[in-house]
Length: 414
Image 1: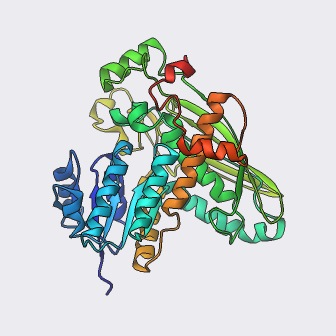
Image 2 (image 1 turned 90 degrees about the vertical axis):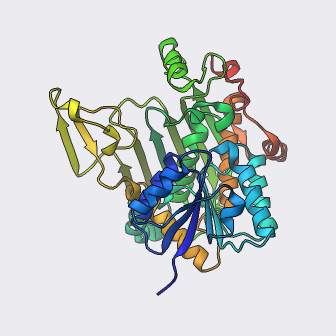
Image 3 (image 1 turned 60 degrees about the horizontal axis):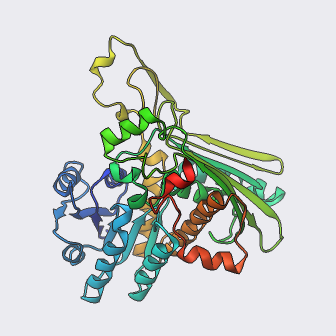
């Protein structure tokens, strides 16, 4: 029997717990270490309760690296560079790691993402970049089902992807400087990555399609209003009167097939102002003579809770991530960790690291997603289409920091 990979988590917040839940459904991985600024003992206890591993709390990344095979970086965006620097120093000091995982986004800027790529390369670390939506079973199954159709008729020519909910869980997500922007950086990376993925012709590598143009808009439609700004300041201690981030983003990335010259389009839409049941992922695609559609609010299970029974509800999010209601007709997903792709991306990373290779998406792929997100911010700032084939634009993106990420969003959004 193959020895399980020993995982060490850096971070113990929302996404770390979601991955821990996913790992209850994945064999061959044990969470044996946790280090975090807050919440590490609770996460370690949860790992033991869920029988995912006998997790030990470590005081530092350097100490944990001596006792695990894989480090999963699930810490906040603003801490990523220093964490990976510590991992690299641990490897230089003798830690024998089989791989390192980084949750999206790889960096808050192209420069940060490139720094992580260079750090990993400096000690020959195998990497996996986690964009869970490309591992969603509905996405994988539609690609498999439509493979013979694609081979006969040609690949998809248009994809549309959106992720929308009512707003993040934690205060730092709302802070554009610490997070790196607003909803475009938070969720646009997902939509851009999955849009490119489904447009890629069968059998071609992840980066086969050449991005040539990005055209995007951002706006502050809900959380810039006075009553909602006050709520955000009261609940999260984040002042959107002074340093706002966008709560809505939409755009189109145009790609070129280098073999045929054919151009294809990937549309993305993201918001923190979605006022329905909770988190919705919507994807669809159209090719010559065929199409697909995914909507995570369509579930085989729905429940109804009336006013007189609503007092019994303790946690509406047991039904659906970021649920906005505890009564009425509720959509329920019975296995969100699997539906959203967390189980399969962890299983793929496990297999990759065991085989001594990078994950399906490596940190270089994460760097390219970050570059497209930054191009979208630049398009929204300049109010024009960004030509990604232009050498001057390519150079500018290497050091570009969006106004919103600088804390100067009021200049653009108000």
